[in-house]
Amino acid sequence: MTARSISVRQRRHVLVRRHHLGGDAPTPHAVTEALVALHATDAASVYVSVLARSATSTLADVSEAMYERRDLVRWMAMRRTLFLLPRTDVPVVQAAISTPLAAALRRRLISQLQRNGTEPAIDGDLQTWLTTLQDEVEHALRARGSATGAQLAADVPALRTFIPPRAASDRPQNVTSAFLTMLSAGGRIVRGTPTGAWTSRHHRWEPVRNWWPDGMPELPTGQAQQGLARRWLTRFGPATVEDLQWWTGWNKSTTRRALQELPVTDVDLHGRPGIALTDDDFGDVTPVPPVAALLPALDPTPMGWKHRDWFFGIDRHHVFDTSGNIGPTLWWDGEIIGSWAVTAGGEIRTSVVADRGTEARIAIQNAAARLQTQLQGAVIIPAIRTPLERSIGEEAAKDPTGS
Image (cartoon, rainbow, N blue to C red; front, top):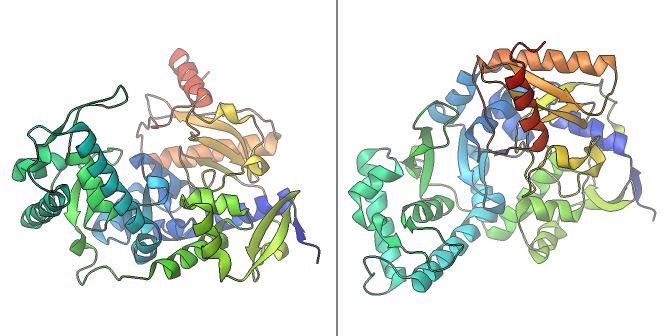
């Protein structure tokens, strides 16, 4: 049986509709659900990812969903990366990704402690020491209600245990950061409010019971991995198996096993073999009108696939750093055609590399004006600096009037 053929045009239309690139999502929660998870390594990216897709949402709406209603929660998950997830989806991601990750981070920390040693030296078994430290940290956090890493280290001095560098790639560090990251991946503690403005990359820790008073539901690993694979395919399919493997960070065996019981069908992705859920309606979707969108660095749409050539209208070097992370992108009709930046005065400037005509330029200007209003004058410097984004900032510094 010949595999169904899916064109680049079809995939772009599906992307625009499912990922709300027209700004039609009603709430921050709806945006996050539509994308499975939002990249949260750069705190500002979460807000911009939402505002770009929800014309009616505000900065306050995003904060309220995260820190007051607790509908959305930052979680260490796919590819050892921080994401924002709907709270109801965290148990699936925890079982499918984060619990195995926590075990790997624990092994890594123990190996580092054994290899580098510590100051002062740790007496006895390292596993026992870590378990005792975990209990002490959780007790201290419950007593405070919320705390920064520095505050927890003051309450639990063992967190200040120093790990001296033993190799050129090592950096001097205390146990604190690695240990708290491990606890968070294990579902023991949760990242709470920022210590500064909403753009701050520093935060307070809170007990997990603040989100799940009765404890987080536990799911079998295989069931959770299958559920996550299905969830991803509903939002990012049709795609390749390699795309799913890259996005999750699973190995090839885990990826195949997660797909084994799912109702998937083979498809031809404009010359590349791919898969889709059998009941997917992507082939019947009515073409959507062209829309413009300004997406932030590390946005989940361009970071959702390993194979990305089908939505690039420009050379990749313009918007990627040397580590393969994407910076701010300009979209038109499901295609990346440029980049954007925020000036020191809070003005959004754009740079279109692939000219798609007057309609595209006007739509981009309007999308930029809307996002600038939503940002309320905030100056955002992305954690991922890319050649085109830097050049926009440099040009703005030379000509602050934009003339």
